[in-house]
Length: 485
Image (cartoon, rainbow, N blue to C red):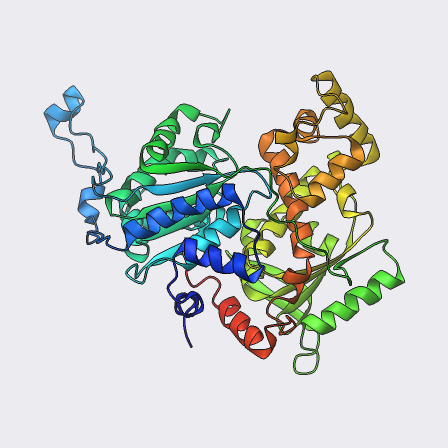
C-alpha cells in the first residue's frame, strides 16, 4: 500500500504551490484572489529554496552530554561545576520558514495543504501535525527520557534530534502556547530543531508577539517569540474574503429538536457510516494511558455516543485523539445548549470537535438548539451585548475589518444578535481571547463539517470521483497519522 506522501506526490504531479493554485482556480475549486495569490507566492519562494536544500546530517547528542556534571570540591565551594545545558543555535544556511497567522476563515488550512502537498521530491522526510498533538508527544518523550536517565537529564536536545530525523520540514497547524509547561521548553526545542536543519512552517490565529499573552512567567517565552520573528517569514492571512464559504448540503448533518425524528436521523447516519452487515453494532473499549474509554455503540469505523456519555466524564484531548484514530465517523446525540454554568463541558466538546476535524472525520449531531445558540443562552447573549456596549462597542458599528475574519456560521450569529468579536471578548462567558477564538472556531468547523464537500468526501459520491475517490480517501484516511511525529 502506498504511503500518504506517495499518494500526494502522484496526485499533484510534482506541481509547486502556484501551479497547483492555478489548476484549482481553472477547475473552479477556488476563486482567484489577489491577496491569496500574494501569500501563495511566499509559499512558492520557500518551495523553490527547498528544491536545492541539503539538510545537515542529524547528530544525536550522547546521554552523557545531557546529564549533570559532577561538582568538584572547589566548584561546589565557588558555585562552579554546574551542568550547563547543551547550547544549540540555528545554522546560518537554514532556509527561512513561514509563520502564517489569521482568524477563522482566513484560509490557513488550505494554504498549509497547498504547501505540504506540493513539497519537492527532494524533501524525503516531512511531518505535518496539529501543534497540540505535537506538544503532547514531546512531553511524553521528555518524560520517558527522565524516567530512563534521571530527572536532571536535559532531554530536550535528544528529543529534538529524534524529531529532526523524521522531519526536514516540520509543519504545525495552529501554533499556540497556553500552558506554562510548553512555554518553558519551546525556545530550546525550536532552537534545537533549527540547529539540526529542520525548516518550520506553521499556522496560528495570532501574530507571534501576541502568543502566550498575559501567561504565567511570560518573560521565559519571549526568547521563543524572538526566535520565530528572526527565523520565520511572518505572513498575515487576513483579507476581505472568507475562504470557507461553501454551500450547505441539502440533507443537512444536524437536526433539532431532540425528538423521534432526530433519533431516526441518527439511526440512518449510523447505518450509512457504519457497517451493520459485516460488523453489527456492539460495545467497544479503548485504552488511553492505562484508562479505559467505553464506546456504547460501534459498527465498522463509526461510533455512537450520547453527549453525556462522551462529555459527562473527565475526558480530555488524549481520549478524543485516540477515538479519532480509531473511528472515521461519530454520531453524538442529545447535545444540549451550553452556557456559562456548563463551561467545562463546553470546553471538552470544543476539544472533541478539534480532534474530529483534524482527523477529517464525519460528524452527525442531534442538538436541542440551533448551532448558533449552542454555547450561549439568551441571558448570556444579553450580557455579552451589554458588556460590549459598556466597552464602547455600539450594536450598529461592526467594522469591516472585524467582520471579514469569521466564517458564515459566526457571521450569521453576530448578524442575528448584533454582536462582534470585541463583544464576545468582553463577555464573562469567555476568560480571554483564546476562549473567544475557540468558540468562533468551533462554530466555523461545525459549519464546514456540515458542507456537502465534507460529508461526501471519500464516499464515492462526488460527481467526478466515484469509486476511485472512495479508494483514494480510504488510503489517505487510514494513514492520516502516518506523517505525524
